[in-house]
Length: 244
Image 1: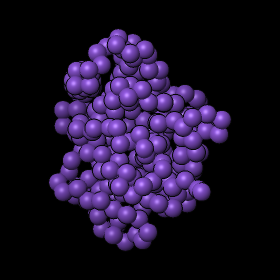
Image 2: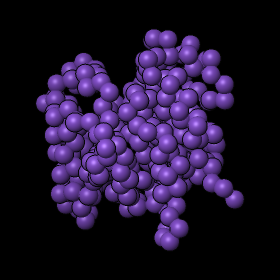
Image 3: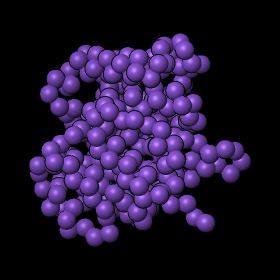
Image 4: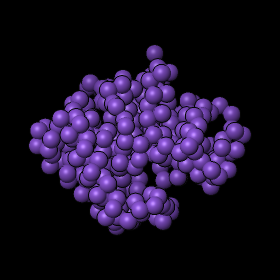
C-alpha cells in the first residue's frame, strides 16, 4: 500500500512567491497544506483562488514554529505516513519532495524519524553564496549540538525536511518563533530519534529578508537561539554532554 505523504508550507506575507511555489509543489505531491500564519498582504486572497489545497489560517500571527506545529498536528490527525515541510520563499526545489519523502523509509534498514535537508552537505551547480552572518550562526549551532549530543549536522536550520509522522507524536512544540528547530533537535535527541541529512541546493533569492525586529541583529539572534537551546536542554533533562 502506498505511503501517504503530505507536503506543508508555512506562509507569511508571501504574495510574490506563493502561487508560483504552490504550482510547482503540486507537480510533485497530491496532498498539500498551507499554514497561513496571519498574512496581512494578498496571500489569503491568492490562496482562496487555488483549488485542491488545504489551508489553515492563524489569526493573529503565531510565528514560524507555530505554523510548523499546526502542520505537525494536521499530519497526525489525518493519518499521514510522511510529512514534508518546505518554505514558500522559492529557495527550495519541489522536485526533491518525492526523494526526500522516500528517504524516510529506506529499503534496507529501519525507518528514519527525520530526514533533514542540508544546504552544505554537497555542492550543486548554481549554488548561492550564503549570507555570511547566517552561515556563521548555523555553524555555531551545529558545533553546539555536536559537542553536547554527538549530533552531527551540517545545517541546523533548513526548513526542507521529511518526518515520519509517527515520530511527530513525540514532540511537544512550545517555541513558536524561529528557534523552534532547536527545540525540535533537543527533543529528537531525548527520544533517540533516527536522523539523517539529505543534500539540497543552496539558494538565496533575497538575502535581505527580515527575521523581524531585533532578530535582524545577528548577535541578538544568536543569543536568542542559545537561550532557547539552554532552556530546552533543562526542560528535557538532557544537559550538554549527557548524550553521545
